[in-house]
Length: 305
Image (cartoon, rainbow, N blue to C red; front, side, top):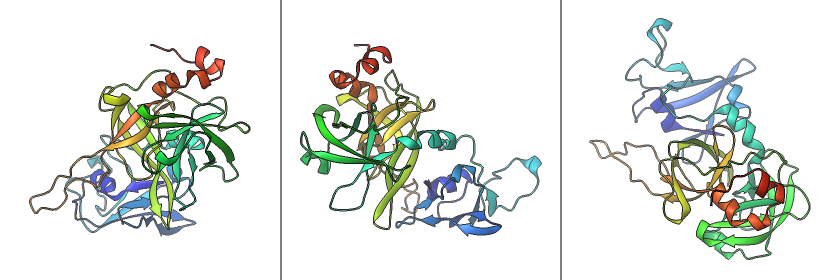
């Protein structure tokens, strides 16, 4: 799991040049959170939603981050209780969808590539970049972030270039349970979502990353929706889930956003990979109706074609 250093600074109204650290207690002793190789992202421990974190900084916030009736608080050390206006990761939602964080590896490295489940036997991933080499009937082994023993062989059964999507099928084991919550309607502008990817790069591998965002546009060219969350290497193919815990789409590309600078020419906006572009699960399912079991295609979804 992760939390951006820039996000922590904004939550506590700390200046951009502040040095911050994140810590928590283990058996009565304080333990600091590690950071990624770039030094921009905290690596959070397992079961982080139930842990109380503390922020240390060499700077004071620009205004109190806690209500005045709580009394004086050390401005350099406060509980991590985010400001309500911030769009943050919902820990309960993250815990409920963690079982659907699927990935696969390629032989050249140990980095994880995202995949999303579409049914018990079907999954999807992205087609761009190195995946352009993937062909029909190629074998891809799908694994699970939440279950080390999960190992499902799939084969490529369809490539949908206009959606930047590759469809994978398992002929034997299930990829998920039958209660997979898929959204029956396309994303809506203003809808909040949580994106699961594998963009935390550490020790020559990648770890699960979570990014909260809002659908910022109606459907655009090539069936893309724009999301406000940042997107990094390792997020392609990542699933986007609404507040109900339903899968609404898959991240496929980045809309670059330029950084703003302060009066001294330093970056004044947090590092981000730009807005993400999402293809709706609804559109993917429409394109593969012939591959879906009758119960999935006829009973659970309303096709507004």
